[in-house]
Amino acid sequence: MSKFFSRNKPLIKEFFSRSFGIIGVALLIFYIAMSIAAPIDAPNVLSNWISIDAWQDNPRAVPPVWYMQLINAPYFPTITLESTNHEDSNLTGLYQSVITITLSNTYQGLPTGFVFYITYEYSSQVLTTLTVVRPDNNNITLNVGNAISFPVTNKTISYTTRLTSDTPQLKEDIYKWLSSHKINLTGFPSSANIIIGHMLFSKLNQNILYRENAEPLQGIYKFVLYAFSFAPVSITDFKIIIDGNAYGIMGTDGNKRDVWAGLLWGAPIALMIGTLTSLFSLIIGLVYGVYSGYFGGRLDEILMRIVDVLISIPVLPLLILFLVYFGRASSIWIIIFLISIFGWMGIARVARSSALQIKGYPFIEASKVAGASNTWIIFRHIIPQLLPYAYASLALGVPAAILTEASLSFLGLGDPNLPTWGQILNHAQDISAVQFGYWWLWIPPGLLIAGISLAFVFIGHALDEVLNPRIRRL
Image (tube, rainbow, N blue to C red; front, side):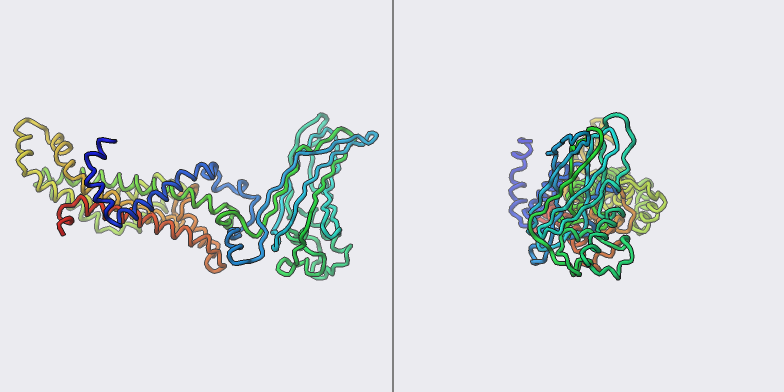
């Protein structure tokens, strides 16, 4: 590696003397940094991207926290609270376990929902209640045990249950609580109409029924969970996830997925697609074109007519046709293969023209006299002469491959298992993100696609200027 840099030091210096080269490399470093950060910051995204259960605890289609702060809008971030500090006691044959979680609510906004995770150790029937101690002392008691189907057991087991704000039994408890405090429920004929995501944190007045009108209640909240049984019982873990109206660095999409994780993973996938596709196309085009130009004659005529036919075919409609045929089996490797086999014809033409010139050089004739085979001459003497062109062509081919994959994914023909930027744009289209103002679903992936394309275009043009003698003289 050190020999390579020392041998090419003048070319490297000339490359970085060009503003396009510096900008391109800086952009490329940014995307490489994203690629390194992806498995560190979001290690399980690739295996969970299309899994509904993996994202079920997130709020749906909410903006980033920083954006809500920037526009000075009332917000409540998504918060996870957890405690394992339980107190167990035996009240003359009635066993009790109590666990408490405290939250200091200083936010001006309201949450959109909540999730409770409760882990028990028990051996007999359990009665469970949750008391929400509010700052205004209008406390709420939820009979969460009525919403849990405990497995029947005659030995001590550990069991975890999940309850959400959409649980019908919890809605019924909230409905009764509102009714007991003289809230007019005329517009709510049953508890099924109640949406309670925000009600725990709202002031108790008539506005509490509608989230857009409800007034946030700030202060100290306590979530006190009780479990009772006639056999030993313990609440070993209690976790609350409060879904806010804002989430993380880049918000969530319509499937509750973390958009930031998807944007991060889009970088290594885009780099892989662009680099592999451009490399495969370059290899095919170089070998094909050099063989055609070197042997000439009838073979050259046939090979070039094949190129003329292929280059006249509109690639994108043909790719769409193939991917529609493959359907859900359209993995990223099929997409890379298809883009590669339709992206080498221009390279083949340039390689053929160069081979026609180089094969007449004296050192080629000397190699033939020395007994070198045609394959040896092609791979040892002709193709190495084309490497300066190949470097620039490789860089310039990457953005075309990335844009093609993004276009196919935007049309719903990409690999559904991967969080590519095109897939994020396709999802934004599906949920009408532009119409609803979900800018974080279409502006960031669009900018990232444009940025990575510009990076390789700038690098390719700078390489072309440095390595192509005719351009350097201009």
